[in-house]
Length: 254
Image (cartoon, rainbow, N blue to C red; front, side, top):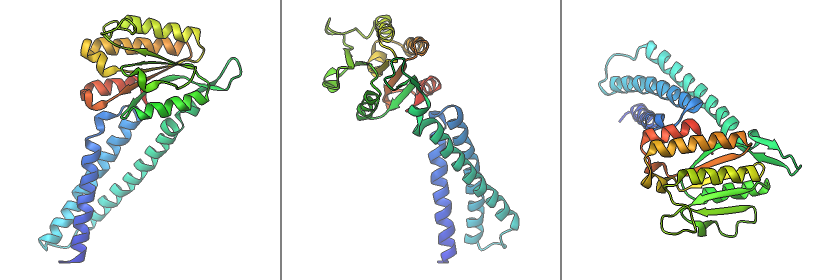
């Protein structure tokens, strides 16, 4: 088989794989990230079509490939490079250095603090990494969780609240207003507090998503006015795509 044909087939398959990868992720992002993914998808589509036409002509040994094919393909590749570099710059500004961009000086001179609303997707170990990072900033932390033992011995500045239906020692998942009042009171009593909610899936078992979403947005607004931070830990696989998109509209990925 002609080596150039093998090369053309491999490039086409690789571009098609990238195209499917980004198409599946369009609805997972919002704002600039979504625009970057849409741009990449558009240029990848052009590149895949051109490469497919070129490969087909080689397979069928048709007429010589027209120069316009090369022109379109060149512009598609150029567009891909521009979108990739733009996306990397966006990541550097919004994600890789998100703590530095959202920090404010502490009133008592104890360093800088985290402010804003963020979302963490995936393993719970990422939350521990976040907590260790926040602890270096000497920020008071309040965690609402289904697994209080997981957060034992993290320091005096970490308070854990058990969300449970089975014990009076915690707060019932149906009492969203109690959770909100507890978090707001903690933020008022502790400057630059960080509130972490690690029980979203459990809350959704006892409450409809609109109610939980309204609760999260209201809590976010209250905490922002108090110069505090709200961090939401979620397993995106447990949510519907539309629900996860709504959360991304209010919470920055961390």
